Amino acid sequence: MAAASGVRRSELGEVLRACRTAFIGVGVMSCMINLLYLTGSLFMLEVYDRVLPSRSIPTLVGLIVLAGGLYAAQGILDLIRGRILGRVGTSLDEALNDLFGTQQPQAAAAQVAGTAAEAATSEVNFGQARIQFEDAEKAMQQGDWAKFGTAMEALEHQLMGPTAR
Image 1 (cartoon, rainbow, N blue to C red):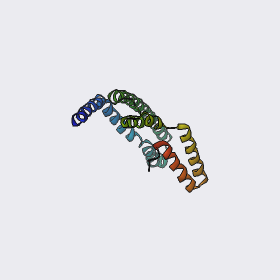
Image 2: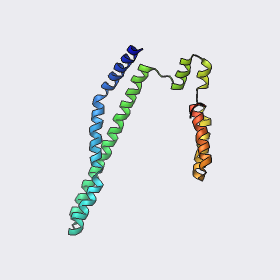
Image 3: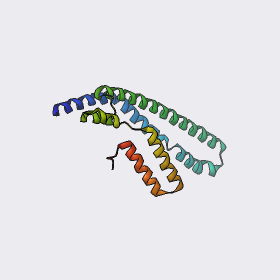
Image 4: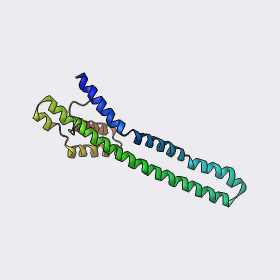
C-alpha cells in the first residue's frame, strides 16, 4: 500500500510540475496587480499634495490620464490572469481525472463498501437540497435564527447524509 501512495505522489507531482511555469507567471501577475491596487490611493495623495495647493488643471488632467491607464493595465492583467488560471484549472482537472478517475466521492466510497444499493442512495437529491436552501434563506431574511439553524441542519443532512454532524 505504501508503494502505491508513493507512485501516486510522484504522478501528482508530475501533474503539478507541468503547470509550474503557469503558477510562476500567475504569481508575478498577482504581485503586479496588487501593486496596481495602490493607484487610487496614490492618485488621491497626489491630488491633495500637488493639484489642490497649486490649482493646476494640467497636473490634474495628467494624473487622471495616468490613473486611468494604470486601472486599464490592472484590468487587462486581471483578465489575463483569470484566463490562465481557467486553463490551468481545466488542465489539472483533466490530468487528475485521468490519474484518479472521475467518480463522485460519495459514490466511490459506496462502491468501496461493495454494495450497489449504497451507491444508489449516496446520490444527492438536488431538488430537495434547493428547497432546503430556500427555506434557510427565507428564515435568515426574516431573522428567525432558530428556523434558520433547523433549515441549515436539514440542508446539511440532505447533502452530507444522515451521519453528518
